[in-house]
Image (cartoon, rainbow, N blue to C red; front, top):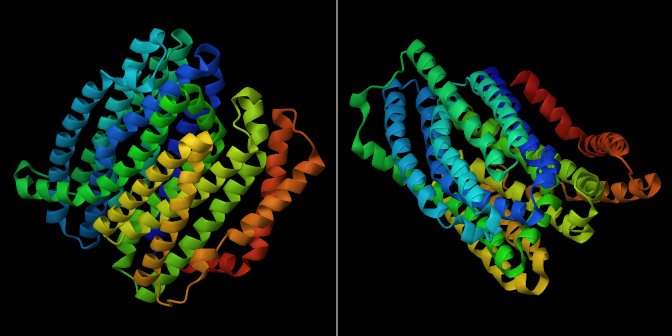
Length: 500
């Protein structure tokens, strides 16, 4: 399966170009933003950004369904179905784009009131919100055309375009913010990046499909198929929507019960963990289309083994990243934006644990999606969201901002076990697989303890040089710990990369 292995690795590699944009946009440039924009206004902008993501979620279900169906039809060499999915997917995307754009205009008129923004920034946050939400609407087309290259196992094209548009987006922010420091200038990078990526993908999709004689025709468009795509996308959309609603309700509660400044402090304190999430997120999406095709072309025993390796590897990467982040987060935030914008050690530790649970949970979701179980997973995600918002509502008045990570940890622990059981019953041949519940926890405890004593021995980190040096050294220590405790897994990964 060299083609699948190559495509999965290319997918993972190039998907990280999106992380480059988020690192620059959401981490490196934040000190620059806060020199020109008050902290409470930036907190309101975070809330507005989250609501714009909510609108963009209309895309999520469609891209998952089209990727799954295009991959299946291409693996079966069924050109008729392949072309039909593209043409009807484009019609569906256009319908969803129009709905998203309309929602953007409606919600935009109330965005200043919702986010409790300073009156001087009412117009600024309105325009910034429109930029972000329209970018989310355009993203529907971006992901539709991206699913074509995923199915064709042409991740290289998709990755280069992502990288090029990322550079364009970063340059847009730097230029616009230097000339006009505002929320609108920050948001301009997102819409320019999305528009450039979509335009380039459309051009290359046309050229690639023409070369392979897979160009769809107007006659392929069928209302029944469009309706079917919408129906199939709905469960995934509901699952993603519930997650986003929870996150936005969380921020809206914090804005109204506490303050916009509180939202900003939580966001800045958890930024390094969000970076870990950015690193981990492409793994599930990158192997999604590959798993869909491999499943139909290999034995159940071999596929079961691949699933085991993927889960164990993701677990260990997760605990390594979050363990390192948790060790150095206080020094990072203080050097980055200042001690007055840091939420404290307890909040940081809880946020790290919440990211650990949520990243595992969403990786499991991708695995189950790859089997076409959209409705079942969506029900679980909806239940997850309802439980989380209930816990948040109950606790936010009692423990304030600490309710945010606690409301993620409790349902994360519960639903991780539910999805784990589902994966074992569906994919794993040997049903006695307790490792799926326990893998990584021992390593995480070891890394945390070693990190604690490492910082005691090294002392306070006074500058970026000492912080970077310490992170590099501790990362090597973490790598050694994980390899020594997982020699057999390391051998299995090397074997499959070389021979499968």
